[in-house]
Image (cartoon, rainbow, N blue to C red; front, side, top):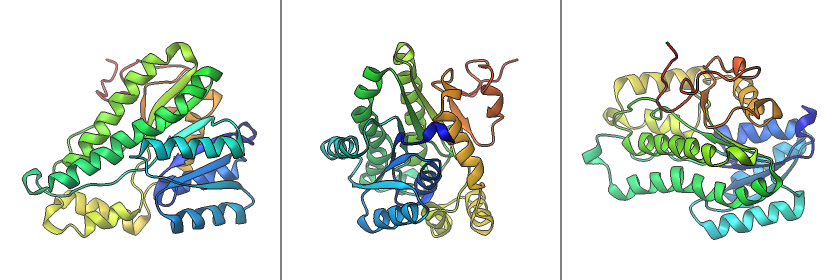
Length: 273
C-alpha cells in the first residue's frame, strides 16, 4: 500500500465502529490519518492504538453538524499533515427505531442532521482544495435502507438514501475536476448500532432483530473485506469510478479494469439486461 504513504486521510466518526476500523487500516498502509469525532475519550484511544501499531494520526474533536468546527478541524489537519487527499464520511447515527408515528420528530431530525448534513459539511470543507489540486477521493459510508425500504428505520433510511443521491449528483458536477465521489456499503458490522437494534424490543422488526443477533455472534463482515473496498475507492485504481454505490457484497473487483453499465451501482440499482 505504498500509494497511501504520507497521504492525508480525514475520517469522520473515527472514534469507534467502522470509522475506527478504516482509520486503523489506512494508518497501517502509511497514511496520515485525521481522526474526527465528538468524543475526546474515543479519539484518544483510537490515536493510541494507531500510534502503538506504528502509524500516524491526529485527533480532531468536532461535530460534523457544525460547519465552523469542521473548517477548523480541516485547517488543523492541513497545518500538521499537509493536503487532505481522501475524505471518508463515517459519522452517523441510527436515529429513532420504531413505527414513524411513534418517533420523536426531534430525534428524527437529528438523524438527518448528522447523517446527511454532516456529510455535506465534511465534503464542503475538503472539496475546494481537491478541485484546485485536481485530485481527491470522497467516500461516504451507506447503510441498509439506502437501496431498499427499511420500515421502522425511516430517519436512517431516508438520510442514507439522500446521501447516495447527493454523491451521485456531486460526482456529475466533478467530472471535469478529477475528483471521485462514491458511496460504500460496508456490510453488517458489530457496532453500537447493533446493540440499539437488539435493545429496541418490539420496535425493531423480527428480521432486523435476527440479523442484529447474528451480527453480534459473528462480528459481521470481515474487516479485510471492508478495507479492500475502501482502499480501492481511495486509490488511483478507481479514478474511472465515480457516483457509484458499491457494497462489499458486490462484484466490485470487475470495476478495476473496466467501467460497467452506469446504473448497476447506483441508488436505483438497475441491472443491465
